Image 1 (cartoon, rainbow, N blue to C red):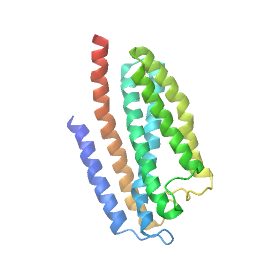
Image 2: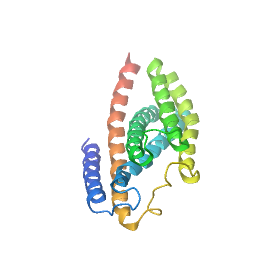
Image 3: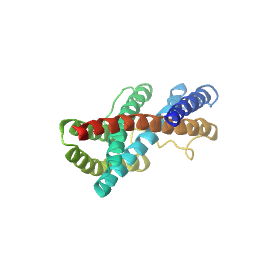
Image 4: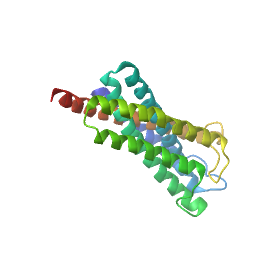
Length: 215
């Protein structure tokens, strides 16, 4: 348990340091001005959301292949944490969009694909809550998660390939070198935060399943 809280502490430290550097030491972007600084939390959140749903895909394949409850615990945990991160990503994007586009939301392919991705996994989470039989719940949600991962791939490729209202992809190779350090620090911070939340949710899922299987 100490190791789990260690991830939480590391996440808090890294996100605090990365955000401080990004907001107070990194240069102001030429065109968007101070608004651009939300990038230092928005972009790492996007990366971590996709990684979390990728972990959910791995967990779904693991359950369908091995039928081990460990994979189902991980599937439940990663889906729920991914939904939280996806919602956070959407809110951050809306806050960035308002001063740059004049609106909080536009039916831009990138924004829409993210919304569909989050809603699809929210649907899988809802499916799990409606199925009482643990075996059926694990199998049905694993199949749905594996199929739903196609949209995660589309979100990733959409950001890389499509040129829409949304600005080009932000990464260490596409931003000023002075902006790379806070981006990388916050990227690790968000990953550690996701690991921390997944580990806590994993323990809850394991305890809940143990009670179900004993009943």
